[in-house]
Image (tube, rainbow, N blue to C red; front, top):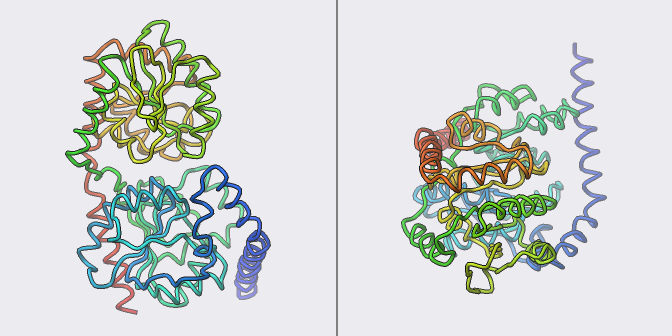
Length: 437
């Protein structure tokens, strides 16, 4: 028994050592990749030293929250507002991986919350960061699992909460390939607040301590748009005019061509229909604009502030922070990343506005929320571009049906609010466990 235990421990140490070695060897490539990405998104070349914890010190903060990009920052915003009331004197530091996430944080909080880029997960780098920040709690949003960071926090007695946690079956299969290493890593979380029972079950099966896992739901259900957002949506609708409008949100490489194919078919039935096309990544705006123009569809770009007359077929949403207004102003929303095998994106922002939703076949990133919406009748799934065009044709010509579907989705959002309060309870448990140890 002891030999078996020692063998597993040795395997875990060896696997973590291999992970660290690979990451160390890949570090120059990771930095080069930032500069490569900065060709199209200049934000990636700025403040590179922060990712290596070189140069200016990170500010000391009582709570450190890691939120990868825009979606995680948006969800974390609700939590941050609550925590700011609790830790006025200690401060909050938020790390992101992407410049777009950093920009969104700035839009939400200005200088009220400190920001740094997430340090690379190497022991020396992570150690320097923790020495500077000295947090009493780390909150990691959704699915970020960094073994060396977790090990360093455990060694220093810093509790770590995995908040709004989700783990698709696909991701779980990947982690299962290194079972002992995954088990050790997951057991270092002080608490895990899972979005659904399925997420919780997968995490426990991979090795998370069952007593530390709570099903709290998704805090994205608690998102409430400010009243000013409705004013923005109404202004946007006036810009588009009184015609059928569908919004394709957070689209990905290879998906826009399919959406334009569906839009061409829709135009045969509804010549005045407008597609509001919003790519997920800003560095792709130019490529998507060129794709639309190559297909001969009349295009205006939001960033150019051009008039969107009746002859325009595609409105490119190539700005940041306006997607909520686009969704609220549209008649139908298609949620991207689902016609291609990206796994889809969050449906709740559109549903909260009472907008009927369409998704493609690939929604594994938001499986629980998507199934909830489909079962309630607040969304529908389409298999391909042809099916998308067909469903759009039906919904965009039947206002009563759109209102019914939208109301059903909105009801799902209202029924599932309360996750934020439950998550705050989990955070309190984690802090109490630290105080007791």
